Image 1 (cartoon, rainbow, N blue to C red):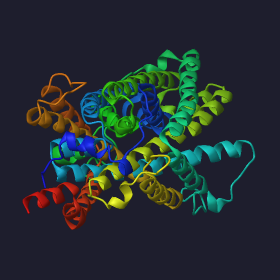
Image 2: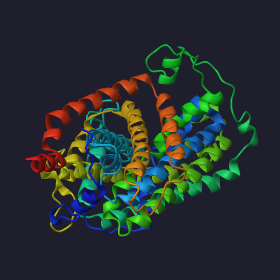
Image 3: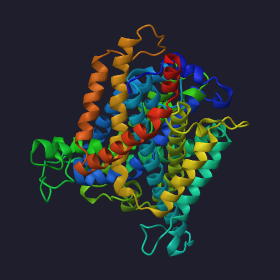
Image 4: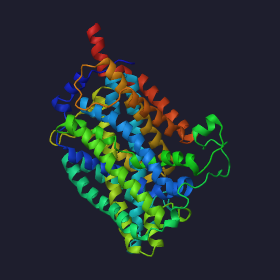
Length: 492
């Protein structure tokens, strides 16, 4: 269960013709991918929610806290991605350092994380597009507006979006990178409009108090939906105050989800040893700066108690008497969420592909397209499944599962850096995480702290999914493992 796959073997597997991916990405492509997936639902929606309910103007500090947790993890990801430039991200890293069962668990976790993330964002994209269509007088039949709409049963827009993105991913990574670059340019332009235009409408009094005094929420902290840290340690829950900033950080962490997807493209990068660290760290730095600036501007334009929860950026400009900017922001959000779906779907297919190449999932899915050199079989399978889920299911309440899944991956990767430094000190590392083991330990502690600030019910759902994954491993993966079969043949 804890047999490891050597780095050398992982790299050799990528050179088998029928399982090889095409190397076409540069550091610029990776940075664009990172920015494309990070800037999405979090900044366009969550800013208003956490400012109004948890942190007030100090939401900017919550973004800083979440960004620091991600930066600690990013330094660990950068070392692995440059040392083991193989598809699969945290799954591949865990397989090379900790062992097969932990690798399977993290891969199983990532499949859930990226699937739910793609579906949730697709439903959010559909909502923005329907809003824009309504503004110009176009209306979908009520039955096709999705389960969240009155009388809706099927979200046709979310369904079609995922199918179209599936086709794009099958046709090749370079095409995906070009489309992403165009959309990211639009999205970043919109964010800059929010920052620059919003500066002229800031009212200083809206920042008073910057950290609102702590208040006890209605209902106390006894129910199961309270953060686990409150359930375990029994302290009285509060909104706002210093603890409110940490609660807000555990929520806005969703806004950073996706930078780890960059690591899944390591195998398709021309010079991964040089370009992976640049892409991972560069995209994270750009987005953190933009997030903090947007949070400061929006809470300065409108008092945090009056912010909209559903569309805070657009509604802040409406409140300031500038509906034109509100329309531009809605357009940018709709366009921007397209790349979030694309890259989350990309990440999931690469993890699934890597697991099938190792035999932990059926090897049928590890064959690449003869022309496009993309993992077309898992891409089509997962694309169709997620399209159906996005079309029929209202899954916004499951979004916190995406957070806990990502944080769990961060813990495993940081632990893997420590282990691999001890077991394989001879490996050439183009990028070295500084201050090992201190920095990875701090990364683990910070990730666990944010996990403890997630609701208890999220932990329960996560535990159920992980238990199901362990059962699947023992029923299928352990017996079909390529590494296990090689070991058995050598013993015989």
